[in-house]
Image 1 (cartoon, rainbow, N blue to C red):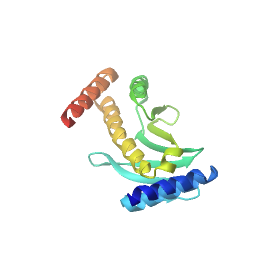
Image 2: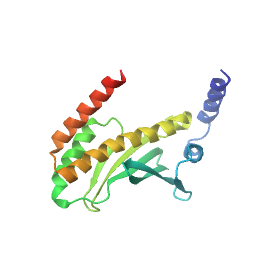
Image 3: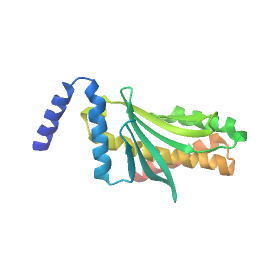
Length: 181
């Protein structure tokens, strides 16, 4: 009960601060959360971003970038650091399938720089008012990125058709939901 009252007054205080303070406070909350979670990370104060290293697949680490700018909290990760240009059309098709399915975020194919990333952004108001949403967004971004990574890896290595990859992923997700129920 006391915790809920404290959270209410914190939210009331924060809502009355000028908008310019929102980015500063969310940045402060993000850094605090990273320290409390004890994740391997680096913080870059001048550019207002943090790098966190997570395992995207068995034995494969990837760098996740968390940034605050333009009134949004951004989460980014490179899904493929480099791709075979022969696969460009299939990569765009697979990215489009994901973008049609994703509620939050977008899969981007950067042809000029030859990489694929998953980028998610959220208006600062939610993590500003609810600090626990910072952790929640990081976890949702991470869990989704693992599925996206596996799908693009399958396309890259097995040359499987994008429609089949998405169909298999949707079946897996439906079975996971049934198992949880």
